[in-house]
Amino acid sequence: VTDQAALNPSAAIDALPPLRDVISAFGLDADKRLGQHFLLDLNLTHRIARAAGDLTQGTTLEIGPGPGGLTRALLSCGTSTLIAVEKDSRCIAALETLVTASGGRLTLHNGDALAFDSTALGPGPCRIVANLPYNVATPLLVGWLKTIARYESLTLMFQREVAERIAAPVGSDAYGRLSVLTGSLANAEILFDIHPRAFTPPPKVVSTVVRITPKPQAPTIDVQALETVTAAAFGQRRKMLRASLKSLGRDPIPLLEAAQIDPTARAETIDIAGFQRLTEAWKALYRV
Ligand code: SAM
Image (cartoon, rainbow, N blue to C red; front, side, top):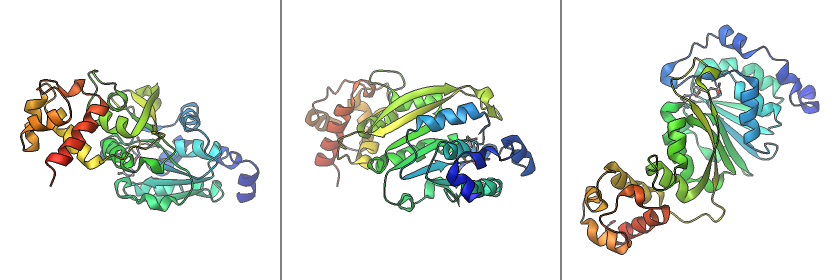
């Protein structure tokens, strides 16, 4: 298998049994608590893998391979080193034949992606590609944003509503904490939707693939402070900032003056630069 894989990266993968057979052989009944909605359509898994760009250099990290549909596509697209983190040990057992077929390119980690140590990715360019479990998609993204300079790109599937929040421009209904955090550190681009029918079992909502790339000149941003300020501002998004920012525990007026922001403005009208000024002002004036 190893020789075959070296000659043609997709031949050994293409020879594997269909994903539906893997699911029934290993009893992979979808576990709702793990957000399991499996993508079995090869055209779609290849479309996601291609959207991630050149996979032949460095390391690719996949979160939640499940029965391995997207994993197969990533390997067929020439991924040189693929690390897949999966919480469900039933899936780990089902993926062993794919490890063999990968000719040494795929490594599995049985564990929680929220606890995965990204230093295990080694040197060189890294990227993340995943059909994310919806219940942990946002905390995973926020964690990756904190070290976004580490990654070439994140190509991720979210429920559409979350994808819209990630990429929302200032002033739009979806603009909020996630838009400001993402937009401060990275560029986010909505690529395409995937209909619920494409999944087994189908989720209740449409899914959307988003590509997130670090800003070329990585700004130095205190993400924790930005999180605190945006949580306060958007916690009561219909209120004026002079009211909503009281939840920070101090008088918001000097803070808003220092950041040159109108105290009667609402959070959804403040652009990313405005939130960065507000965060710097909060750190300078109030943070102990
Ligand atoms: N990639 C597969 C596909 O596209 O068919 C499965 C995607 S499914 C939406 C999400 C996967 O993430 C499931 O396999 C689930 O077991 C796994 N998962 C859920 N929570 C996880 C966590 N905290 N850490 C790692 N994997 C997790």
